[in-house]
Amino acid sequence: MSEVIHKADQGKAPISLVPTGIIWEMAKTREFGLKKYPETGRLGWKEIGKERIVDAMLRHVLRYLDDPGGVDEESGISHLAHVAINCAFLIELEREENGGKEL
Image (cartoon, rainbow, N blue to C red; front, side, top):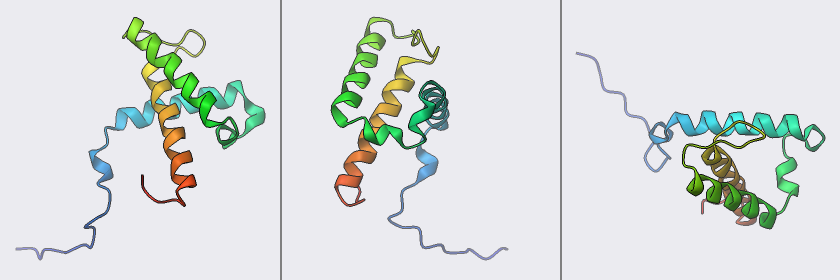
């Protein structure tokens, strides 16, 4: 019988609970954004400002509501993936404003 190894992971986020599909979709959306705006670099989204990120996210929410299976005309990526990445940007900006603490 093997010995049970105890690991001190209490209180740590169970990352395995996050569906991997959302991560893949956000990565694909970020890749498109970097190709569209190469001059901004990997962290260029931080300079956009919350209001513009919210506006972009809400446009994609509305397009999703109009056509749940639809994709963004320019990127060919689902509107929900665009919503997800914009939401991720806002979460990161909020965390930074909060000193890196969880929301």
